[in-house]
Length: 213
Image (cartoon, rainbow, N blue to C red; front, side, top):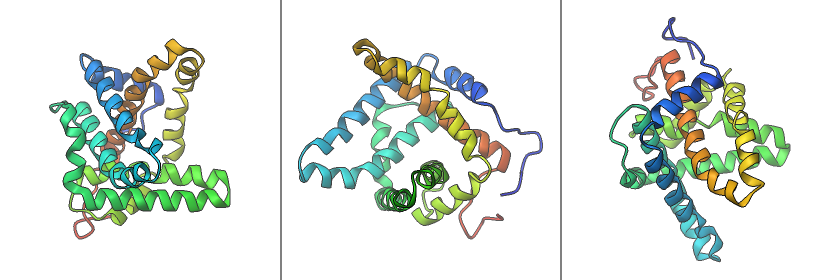
């Protein structure tokens, strides 16, 4: 991908966390509730057979819905809990996207752990891209994410790594586990700010027929 905006620059993890805190101001409660509902629904995996099948069908749309919510938050659009289910409006693409990214990441992980981690970061922006381009195919969203993340996978890894202290603190105590309810939306918001930063650098991702990349 070529640089589209010469004035934009790759923000540091510290700057992205700062942007995330600003976006969350006054909306922490809703973001915590959103992630709690998402977590409770996806805990269906504990139900034998039927739960696994249901989870396979709904995880993609829910991931897209969660992305929609946090993109709305960062862009200062209405931030509503019910938007978590808007991913089902694009069920086919979000389901296929989940299926493909899971398969690709698993296959790379079978080779070695490191390639699997790299694949995870290569496809990290796919749901964001699908949200901005609902008519785009899942495969194209994956391709565009791979292009967008070229040279930026380490940046996103470092952003996630910058939360490790909070995560470790939260997991060593019972009270701390409750704190994860605040850390998770904080991380998701920071990741969304990362996507917005990439868009500022490269410009909007377009559908294949419109793309100049």
